[in-house]
Image 1: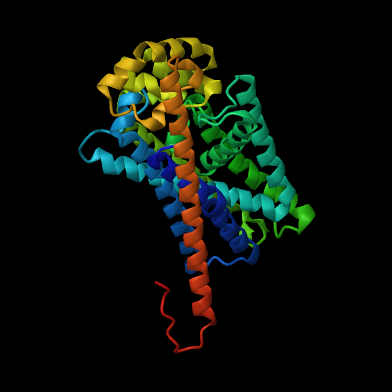
Image 2 (image 1 turned 90 degrees about the vertical axis):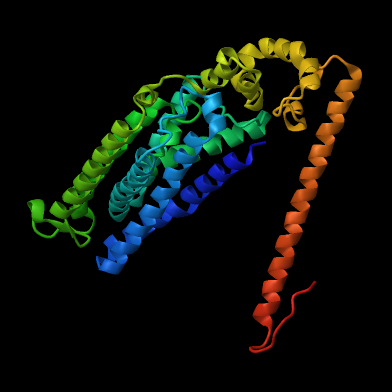
Amino acid sequence: MVDAKTELVITKCVEMVCESIPGCLLQLYVILKVGDTSGRAVTSVVVSALTTGFASGTISYDKDTDPVNRKESPDFYGYIPDEGIARPLLLMCMTLNGALLLLVRAFSAAMLMLVNKRYLAIYMAGDMALYLLQKVARGDFHYWMPIDGAVGLFVSLVMRVIIKTIADFTGVIQFRGDGELGGLFWTVNMFLALLASFISVFVHYADAEDEVGVIATGQNSTAFGIKERVAWTLVGSLSGAWVVVFGVFLLLMKKGYRLTFFSTRTGKQWTMNFFLKGTEDAVKKVTLELNKAQWRAIREDVKEWVQANWWRWKEEKPAWFDLAWQSKVPEEWITDVEERARLARGRRDRKNVGVARGSVKRLVRVFARAKEEVRAESPVGVRVEPVA
């Protein structure tokens, strides 16, 4: 379905949205609730934010420096200079951007939770609903993964929610892509996220008196053990630092790519552009690798292109014309009966290999779990030899 590099990105995204972001939020919530501002607690949060920021930074860095991506999408990939000190500096900027945004967003979210957890739930649900509605209104709901039918719609919903959540809390530069949030939406979303952090602090102290009581008044008022002046200073400093670091990032990147932060293209247009604007078959073929719903408008053009070049590709054997890509071509596009039968067999073989690999992985996990259980149940000092 996807290549190994994309699978790695998806794994990082799942880890961030299921562990890193909630973990940082939970840490700050507990710190604010119990009033533990010790160096150990603060250091733990900062380290968590930096590691998450580094993960978000490497997603963008790895995708942009990939030669294949730069060849297929030269108008989007290539903003990182090919050599010099700018490369590590840009990675550092992306890491700091992710960490700073996560800290300010998690802190403000924790402030809302302390007053009323429903406030955070309502805000996030409403923000997500508006995002999904604008995707639907623009005919851009389908995610680029090549999954059709009801399952495809479900995957699209899940991936849209995951990507939006990660962008809200870490600002991954990669997600400004037309197939993800979109350039202009990403930019507006970042500044709205910072604005929401200030509003959260205001709501926290405005409602704290009704919920738990506020000590003193004005900038010295204290709710949940943190002074209002300190809260405003923290949110303002983190937000200002993010803006400064992002400004440095824009200065260091290649100038021609700054417009990608204001792109209004949809995922459909991005998908079809591979075929419509690609000058080589190695670029045009990418359209066929993506969700069919995104290129349905040019289906007949793609069909004619495939039928006109199929036998030439069979003879020349370009590197990308492997069985994996051939299996993405609809069988009805191949008019030769024997060739169509060969493709059908290839699809069955690939499916069987996938099932076999999944079974082997499950068996390995079962044996590993059984081995650990045997070790755990063995008396102390008794060595359990692994089964050959």
